[in-house]
Image (cartoon, helix red, strand yellow):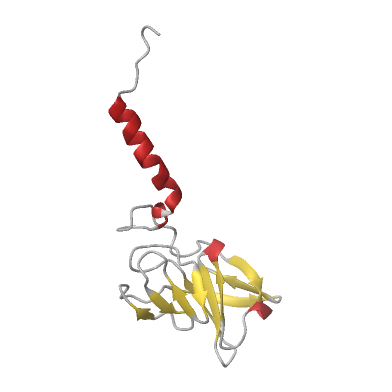
Length: 142
């Protein structure tokens, strides 16, 4: 068609080479990891689920809210952001009470928030948490 620009071979190949990367989840990592950082903490109180889902000495990961809630042997609830302090990746795996970051393998104790395996060096950010009407609520104002 006259007047219509055509793509060069280089432009087409470059676009084809970059397209599959979008589906690999590489943008899930924050600063230093190639993508936008997820919010480190909820900006308002968030109802997470039933308090009964968190056993004494155990933890529950709420992936959609980037929060983990644990219950100590004394019954006390603690909550932490599940945004890795190393590169800002959302942590999506909980093994027992150990959180495992998918980007670089950092591990955190879900009961204390402390780093148990590097490369992260800073503990997870603790969040206010409370039980209200049988539900767990975390975030500012909780």
